[in-house]
Figure 1: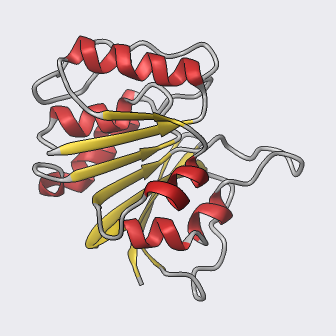
Figure 2 (figure 1 turned 45 degrees about the vertical axis):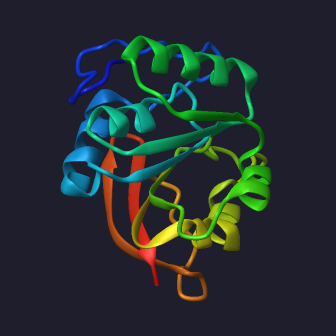
Length: 185
């Protein structure tokens, strides 16, 4: 896995052992192609950051700032190493995503929010998608014209958005990954 473009383009990123499914290069390339000019100068929040590849890609492409959140200590250490290797600066928070949102998310603080939670492949697996989409703190943290990019298992549909503060802009499927671009309803 590597940074696709920008100031850190081509630099390989390390992936922590416990992060079994980082966002693949071709998927990141497609996401950032779709985001286009929304990236330069943006303020980014990367939830379930893993290796940090999404926020690092944004920073490499000219994002103004980034906050990366992951509860796993080894993932956070990997993010810090990847940022250093790419000569990029960001805030890395080692804590539960929902705790971060409740305690530290400032209204309208982020233009781009990425969330790549663990996939729910079995009924007994933790569902992170519904709590994210129903989180008032997450919705408030997104700037009025911002974009929330959510990665899910492609076969796992989003819950109905009618009663939620989100409007689906588009969904793209790349292998087993479903990428959903959302904004405020």
